Image 1 (cartoon, rainbow, N blue to C red):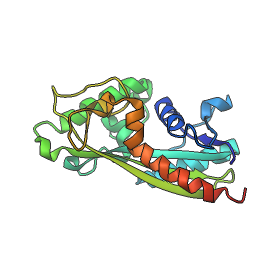
Image 2 (cartoon, rainbow, N blue to C red; image 1 turned 135 degrees about the vertical axis):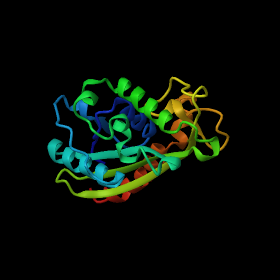
Image 3 (cartoon, rainbow, N blue to C red; image 1 turned 180 degrees about the vertical axis):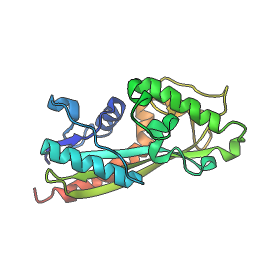
Image 4 (tube, helix red, strand yellow; image 1 turned 30 degrees about the vertical axis):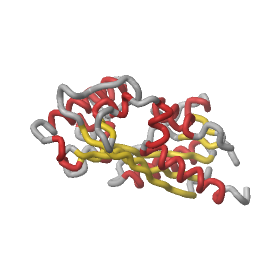
Length: 218
C-alpha cells in the first residue's frame, strides 16, 4: 500500500487520524512531513463531500501522492443544520479572510463556540440535539477520486454554565455532550475512548476497509 498524505493543515485532525490507523498496514503522513509549503484550497462546496473532494484532489495533484482529505463539522438541529460546512469559521459567517485569518486556531475555536452558545440561547435541552459528521475522500496522484466514506457522532450542545468543559479535543468538543447519557463532553473523553466512537473514527474505519480493495492490484 502506498504512503498516503492526510491533506489537512489541522494538527488535531492529523493526530487523531494517526492514532486511528495505528497498527494498520497504512503509512499516513501529514503535509508538514513533506517539508514544503502548500496553498490551502478554497472550500466553496455546498456539502461536506464537495469540500473533502476539493481538498483531496488539489493536494493529490500538488504532492504527486495519494491524498486523503476530510471535511467535518457540526450539525445542530435547532439551527437548521448550522454551522454545517462553515463550522470552522462559523463566528465569521464562513468568511476565512480578514479578522478570521488573523486569529490563531484556538482563538477562532473560542469565537465559534461563543457564537454557537449565543445562537442557542433559550433553546431547551431536548431541542439542542446535534451531531458531528465527517466525510473522507481518497484521491490518486492524478486527482482521480478513488473512494469516499462518512461517519457521524451523536450528542447535544450543553447550556451556558454547563459547558465548556474538558481539555481534550478541539473545536466544538468542549460544548458537545455525548449521547446517549449527555453527561460528558467529547473534550472530557480520553483520546482512545473518543477515537473508538467518533465521527472521524467511523469514517476512517470505513475507509480502512475500502483501501484493501482500492490497492489490491497495486
